[in-house]
Amino acid sequence: MSGQRHLKAEGGTSSAAVGGASADTRRALLAETQRLGYYGRARAAASPAAVAIAYDRLNQRLDKWVRSAERRRDEAAEWPSDRARWDQLIEAVTRARRPSDTSYEGLTLLVNGARELFRALLSTAPPFLPVAEVGRRIDRQIAAGVYAPGTTLSKSEIADVLCVPVASVSLALSDLAHSGTIEAEANGRFRIPHPDGDDRARQLATWLRELVTAGVYPPGSVLPHRRELARVLVTSQEPLTEALCLLVEDGTLVCTPQRPVTVRAVKVAAHSATRPLPRLVEPAHGVPPTPAGIRESVRTVHVWWTSRLAPHPSRIDRCVDQLCAAAHHLEARARSAAGALANEEPGLRSVIARMKVTAAAVRQAAGENRLWRTACLATAVHDVLAIVERLEGYADGSAA
Image 1: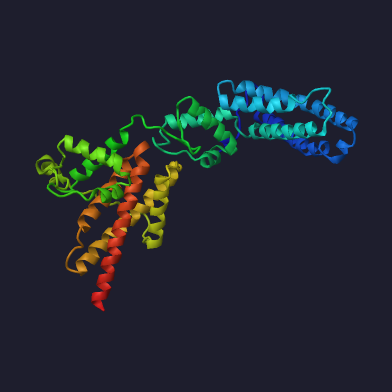
Image 2: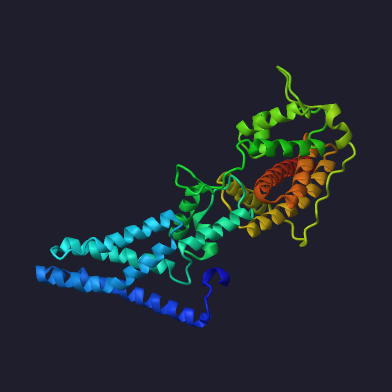
């Protein structure tokens, strides 16, 4: 994190000297901010002469910082939102410099403008990054695939990672939206665009084809109702409808009038009959997860996905590990409970198969698919947990 918090020293200047100069600048800005209170006191309004003296003293102190703001503006030449911010701040403390203006109201406006200028200079002085560098780092993360297409960017999380104010992130995102790198939404949020408009439907079609091939939906079986399928795949019905049409076109599914959508037997029978289900990896620790812990992991992932948030990859990894551990634990409990009842719960095999296939796929997913596949795994784990609790309840009742 230290590499994100400190600007690199240039030329032959040592990092200690740069750090000392930065600390001196910050102390000077904080002192200037505190000193502004003297110019806005009632004594400054005692007479026009007192107002004129306050104007003159404040303007003299502002000269140095206006030059610093102008340098910041020049550095932001390629970032329109940041440059406009500096233009407004500089204009606010220079437009009142008229010799004939001796009003106390004008002095108050000048004091407020100076306070905002000092705050902006503080938020972009080392160890904070300038907005231009914030934008470049976000751009590099997007290019590297850290944020999946369709993801809504969290300003606060980006600010925490880069150790910068949220305002700097907002300006950087506005400029990236202006350049077309990201999309600005009507609610003020920003999201990563999809490379193609129907990309979501193709992703759903690919994943459904994998589930069919793995035997989650065997040849000749009827697919779940569209609303249930949308819940299982954690998606809306519109892209799901497009995905089903794609699978009908390539022969994976059969759709006839007045009949439910079924899996074409000839198309997938040869593949699914010979492919065994993947095995769940045994967790490193032997402590079984609690139902409350499982539900919390499921809720967290669903909030991330439905809100299109962009959690750090390490947080997604932790949730994947928790869900996979829960899947390994629940599979054994489900088999035991079903065996105790001498018959399996209807649909248990399909749900366990979906959970195991998704757990294996989420380990391989990257970029745009990872968070979505994690949400699909969370749904499958939650479904198995519900069946296990129902089966164990039946077993307890029969034993009694």
